Image 1 (tube, rainbow, N blue to C red):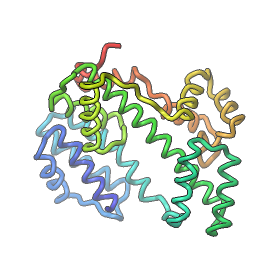
Image 2: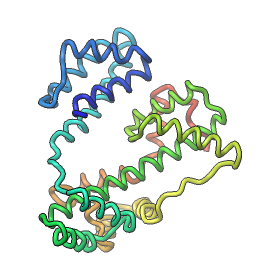
Image 3: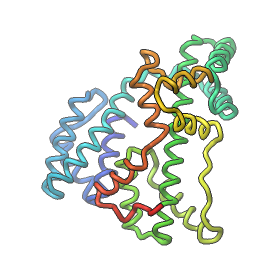
Image 4: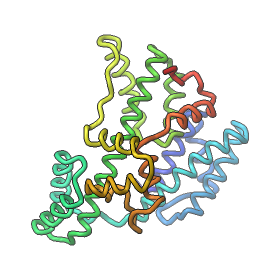
Amino acid sequence: MAESSEFEKYCIQTLEVYFGELAGGIVNNVKTKKSLNDGSNISDYKEFIDLLEINISILAGKNTANDIGNTLRNKTLDFVEKKKKPEPILDGDMEKEIYTFLDKNTLPTERDIADYAKYLTLKYGGQAKNVEKEIIEKIKDQIKKTISWNKINGEIKDLLSRFQEPTKTDIDDFIHYLRLSKLVFEENELRDEIEKERLYRKFHGPQDTVMPSQINELVNLIKNTTNKDALSKKLGKQELSYLIKDESGVSDKSVSEFIKLMTPSEDDTRDTLEDLGLKHLISDK
């Protein structure tokens, strides 16, 4: 699916929370004035969202329209960056081997990554440095997904501690909140997880969320390290500096982004819920 189509689908999903079945019609109406395609740039996406915001302000008011517009503008960057991504440099067999390697090594060292990249290029061909970059990106993606789902599972448990039998409105509000929290999930999968956890609690009681031990150790390291320089040094000693590097190397910005990813603030969660008027979803801990 083209990035523009994916973005339009995301717009509809976001609007459905507010407008239900009207969401598709609202987006289609904007498309008659401004369409998106594979050649669309950031300005085109901005114009599309501006028009969408004008349309929904009539139905929901200026403040709500502005909130929705900001959510979509933030998401726009993901779609535009996806367009810039080069074609994958890995063939299918090499990629399978990388995933097998990562299943056994959640947080491999820089030396292990370099050696494994050399092994793969000797076996399949290609440039070791390029393969090394691909492995690091997959590790970072894997960590993001793990952290994101760990947070989502924690939120599900909080929801069900508050509401043993949540209504459809409670769950819709909950999904809306998670979307605005920029957590990545498939709605149907999330609804299934909520129902599975509800049924498990009904027959067995609450269960703990378990994160892979290496990632859990990394989270604890970050929480217990007082400043960014100290964190950089500790990760360096463990040969994990690749986690806090961007194209320019280790920078204050790259370290800050990594810390924010690994240790989401509970206060931010509470503030977001209160701003959305969803105080009833805040659990008393």
